[in-house]
Image (tube, rainbow, N blue to C red):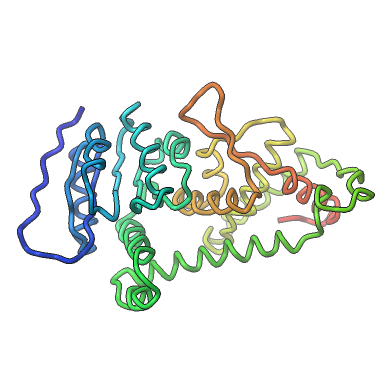
Length: 307
């Protein structure tokens, strides 16, 4: 276990709500402390991951927990993530989990509450924005307006707001599609779902990737659609897709992909399935209604180039 230096805050009074930091290494400790201090928040304490569970239990007034993970801490990390997810669900505090790309699957397997903010390989702007966002959630409507207007990372906050808007717009488009058979009248429920070949879906995915040869990726970022296509391809090929693979398929930063994934699960478009052979991995699959909607979509567009 890496040694984590004990944090000693100065004695200057601050009315900012405290943040309790759990770090997996000394380097992780330094980075988390720098982010929280830059935000103007008070630090209640900084402890190693192995000691964080007990420390959280003794922290009465912390309004946020920041977990900085740059290495796999095994069972201690798994148990802590599960505890934090439960506590956030119960409304005890807000939480941010900052991890490396290698830890996406074990983190996703334990963090089930959608209110936990998960950031992956995040730069300083994303880290500060994540902390600012949970600060906004903790305050009333009047404070929220001033926070967004005055925060030094206002541009990043607006970008995150745009991401949320894109999610809402995508879900609105999906919900405007014809009702799926399970919601139709019995007479229509027996209508056969069109067959779609795996090669058809792969061709669409390849065509989407080819665009990056000629234009910058950010012009065409559409993670919801990319994830839908990847899951349909996997379903047809009878393959299972872990969270980490789906994040890659989304063709956006992992933090953004996880945000979309969380929303799609909440809306019932994706389903999370625990890996029966590996408790530290979660698979994602299409909900039956989403699968049918995609298949009918491909059948309707026919030979038209779908990108």
